[in-house]
Amino acid sequence: MGKGGGCVPSKKRVPSGAAGEAQRDEKNAPIPVEDESHVAEPNAAAQTTTTSLPVAKLRIFVVFYSMYGHVEGLARRMKKGVDGVEGVEGFLYRVPETLPSEVLEQMNAPPKDDGIPEITAAELEEADGLLFGFPTRYGCMAAQMKAFFDSTGQLWREQKLAGKPAGFFVSTGTQGGGQETTAWTAITQLAHHGMLFVPIGYTFGAGMFKMESIRGGSPYGAGVFAGDGSREPSDMELALAEHQGKYMAAVVKRLNAA
Image 1 (cartoon, rainbow, N blue to C red):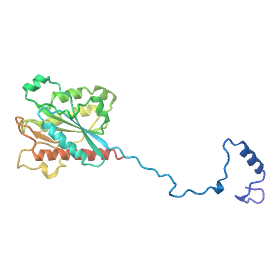
Image 2 (image 1 turned 30 degrees about the vertical axis):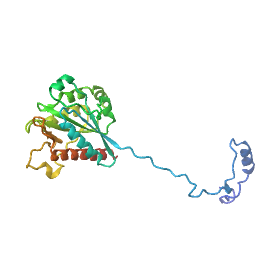
Image 3 (image 1 turned 60 degrees about the vertical axis):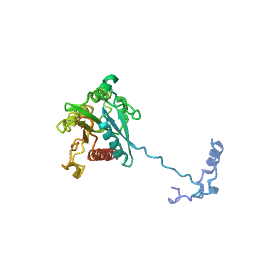
Image 4 (image 1 turned 90 degrees about the vertical axis):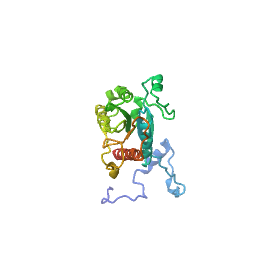
């Protein structure tokens, strides 16, 4: 405020005693002082427009072991379900085989699809969500999948998988062969890693209650009956697998919304 009655100095007038200082500052300024009064305002066309970068999709890894192709069939259909949800992408991986090739030949196991890569334990950390598929061995997961989980010790030690959502899908030889027990006995693997188990419940709707034909699957996850190995997954079993993929993708999106 000025000395005369508290009037605010005019913006066009240089306050008394400041003119000389401004000239000295102008001469000593490291960057030349420009007169901005004659600079024209940039028009809309000349303004730089910012373009938003594409948002990276969330990644769900469908990790499975399949000896005769039944679990692989579910895994492929599950990936289709994941890919059907905007902003989410599914990736197929198989766990390493533990049986020698000569043993697999004696068991008449078909060759593995080279188009599906083997996954390492360290790669699990890159996923936003995980779906694990495996056949049953006496009501529990197959040894190949168990060996893979046993290799995740470093991830467990550092709790790198804590908070990640995960689900299961299975294959059994008979109706009483472990469609539920194979999945729920595997929950211990998730618990020690601090992961979030995501069952499908009865979200499949009426399909969960159909009794007209044999159908694998349970509230724990999708499933298939392999029989003696010659039975292929039914349309209903494949539809349930696709539903689980969509359901998991929706859950992963909600968890990452924040």
